Image (cartoon, rainbow, N blue to C red; front, side, top):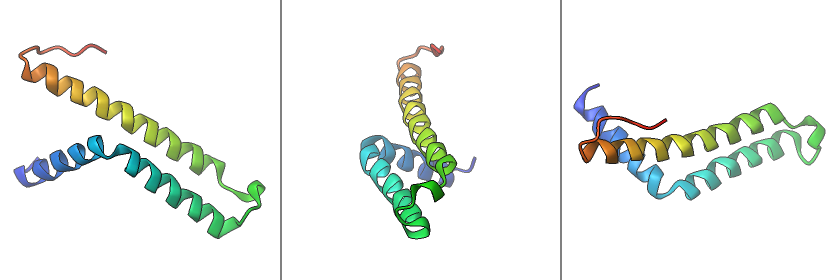
Length: 84
């Protein structure tokens, strides 16, 4: 990966780790607004697969960020293994 993209990825990861709650609220708020705009308050028409997939993505991203941070910390300290 080019150095330019590595810098962008590192800054994005740092921002997400610091402001994860903001990211979570914005993402789920936009999803809720989308469903309200398309289908209104009729919950039977809402796309629950999209909603559950988005929640799964958010939870998975949270755990991935936590695990990746632990890997970099261990790697920086000179330990080359990662507990899974």
